[in-house]
Image (cartoon, rainbow, N blue to C red; front, side):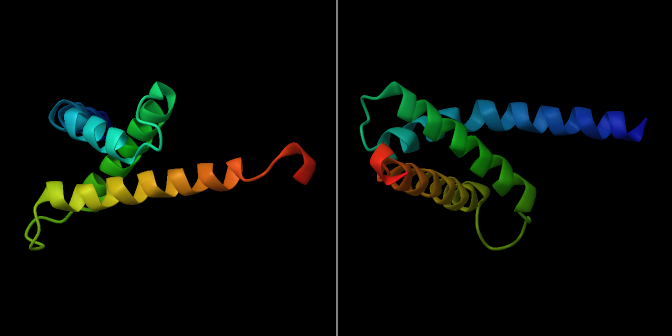
Length: 98
């Protein structure tokens, strides 16, 4: 019974995060996208940003001296930059390199 309640609370928290921060993730994705007109890249960055947001939510401790949004932005930025670095390293390889 408790696990069902915990799962429901977790899902409600994710829905709240989605509603509150979707505009932030979209703005950050457009800012970090190498080609902001490429909808696929922006969408990929938004998805990666969600991972950062959820990770920040799981690691945030109230009263740590920083607001949740500042804490979350650090995680979101880190995940987006890691994604871009990975994509950059992938694009550096050509078929002749393999």
